[in-house]
Length: 79
Image (cartoon, rainbow, N blue to C red; front, side, top):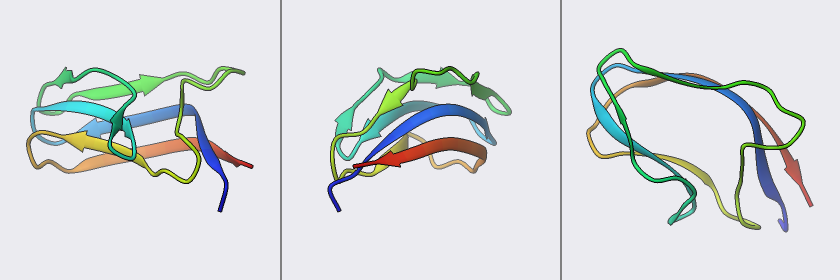
């Protein structure tokens, strides 16, 4: 409770084509990104977070087309 997430690094692969938006709950953190089938998104590690959620909100990977998303996300939860 009372925490927010900071995304420092990620690697995601998408089985099918989709427009992908990262969100904090229902609030968009990015615009839609067009990913082709078998495409990927990579955020290299940085000392500053690439994305941050609002307090008590989930980090959401919103795809406009149902697709399998595989990979890893490096994050920290902060009060």
